[in-house]
Length: 195
Image (cartoon, rainbow, N blue to C red; front, side):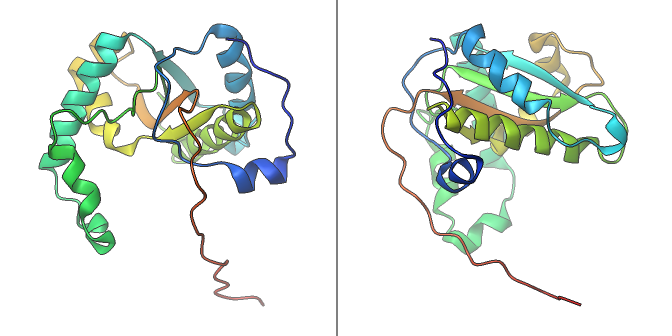
């Protein structure tokens, strides 16, 4: 699958991008992934350090194994921050059939080996560029925060063939959406001060 020419403006991509949670089970090929990674590394970076590194996981068995481990770890951890949303989001993690990657065939882990205090912020900026580029080219993405704990386990790093000092910062699934994701509401900007 090669990427079509981007056909939306930056502002349209910002306003239309959605977190997609339903995918066709397809891997993205290099011709599709390469422009997304190229967009990611155009992100702003503190002191021009460019600390980001990328891990692409497309092996279906490994994705399934990671999903199962992550689901169990996430279900066992307290997540009080989700309770103000009714706590319903946590229920799905107890289901043995729940795939935290929502059927996507490609997981892109953005991380770093840098100890710079701003390396994580740089990785998040790279993730935003990647997600906007994906949307502009008709693809879906979603940050999978529930995968972080498992991705940073020593045994997972061995499976992913990454150095022990690599820290996963932003796990992003990417792929072809299996339907239309409706928009969600956003609060208006809360202006705390204007001096």
